Image 1: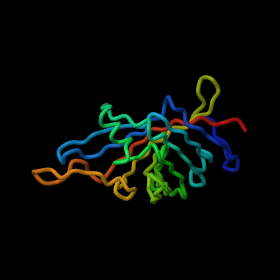
Image 2: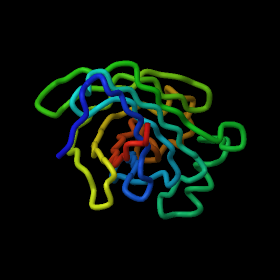
Image 3: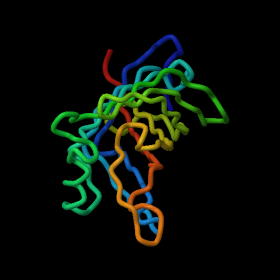
Length: 184
């Protein structure tokens, strides 16, 4: 395993074929629906041996949402939810990194959805760092977090006869990221 000196700040871009951005939300108060975004661009800056000075920026094409139901996906793209016609992307920008364990970190950042920006904390684990068989330096990360969709103006819902609502407010986020170091 090769690492770079802490002073050698590098730029890393995600490998989209080895990166997954998923979410889950309660449905009718009895089950959980999961989905993912298929189109994401992200840049990380820093080195694996100095993660506290790292930074990240990610842009997600909201129209790439996939919950395995075209009808539901179309509704999520509509003005009731993401309104992709007016707000085609969401964006996350990190502000700080704090170590909370061996290889575990909390990343504070700002998430913007529908031009509303709120702070979001991600619990991040550094999964590994190596050179692949083709000579590329790679790093793997996993992350989890949660948001309230209503904080971002995603308030559409429907009351249920039995009490409760059709769609939960809390959205759990899960990311599996593989990034490749870019040439200087």
